[in-house]
Length: 262
Length: 277
Image (cartoon, rainbow over all chains, first blue to last red; front, side, top):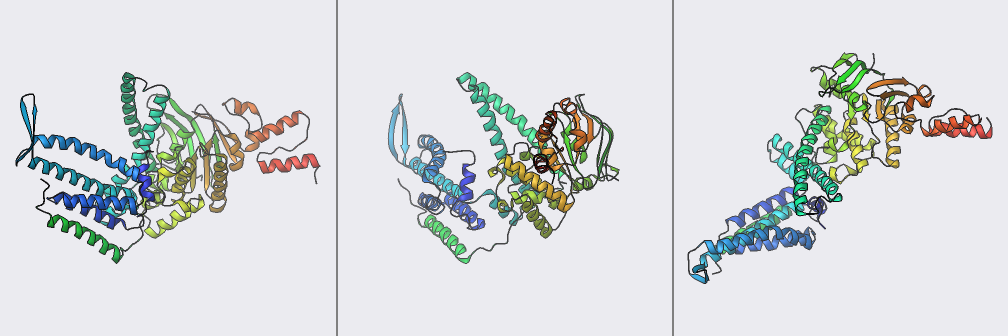
């Protein structure tokens, strides 16, 4: 179900492709900031929910793929939550667990912190996935160009973007060649094979880099990349909708600033 | 004065292996030249000398009669456009049109001219409807076309293609033959290409260099090179299908004119079987 171009393919075919990249970036980054600065879990949860609706409903990203993507950060955050629940203190004890003669207490403050962490992670990741799944990298480069970011930075990003796919292709080719010859049949062999893959990939990356330099020189490389972009104006409704959305999120964060679950 | 000329060009790899040995090569204006040779014959090494990517160990490479120096290398690369074998290594921009624009932009042309050249180059290779695609969504043949468009957009006087048909499907090969011939006829571009697919040679070239073991073992026009098998088999090549067939018909006593391209063969066969007239 998931192949190496998946995220890029989805972004290039999503239902919000025609919406100006600047608007999508503003909404996504704005929502991340509001979520991170919100003292209560309400605003980040609302952001997570609305971003999920935008991404699945409007951008038409398949829900199964979205859930699979979200499972990655969620599994990480659950591991951190367990640590936070038992390692931080303050407030009233909610639950005392005796383990080997010691008592581990789960307190209201630690529970609130855990919920806040979960909601901020969800809000942030949903906003990030909204950007990643609705805005192709090529559009982001042109926004970077408009923002007058240094050329060196943009050129380097473009080369990295292109070469990510070249290297993924190489690693898949090497991996396939190894699998075909039983490279991963036992644990020991898979460690050997993986080490070989990593080593080969380094060498190939180096070679590809040199070949690319030759190809660039052959076309008179002079430190310039061309940015092709048509002049686009953001529609007034677009700006109004984005501003309205961000204001609503900020409003939720302010209104529920002292709300806590426990 | 010739567009490209090499005089006693010798190249020894840093490891001590000789890549080229005393190569004398001449590319006149408007020529269509095939360099044929088996794997490892030195074709790619020779081509990398044409635009100064490799520097001769001894001997000279002259472009418009001038040796390639640090001072004129940009001019040389503007005149001599080289399309390398592996298209993947040549496409490094996020979109097709950005990649084709790379060369013209670096020539310092203004944005409008660059745009115009990009459109024109993509139209020539039949990729104008795929300008905004990302390169990793292209097929092998499409990547090849983009790589060629990237060079055409710089409007070089010489188009050098290293194994242009490697990895292309039959339709891709005939498309390629079509637009290389039109570049040569319409724009007067000089074309130099390497291949070990001998049947491709008569479709594009009018002059042939045969390489083997880092040397030029023979050069001449179609009838000189395809006259006898020994020359080609000695460098691990073979006669193209059509002259080979006609030669074996001769051995059976059938009178037929020699032909090299499919079109010429067709009329030769018609003449032979229907009688001239």
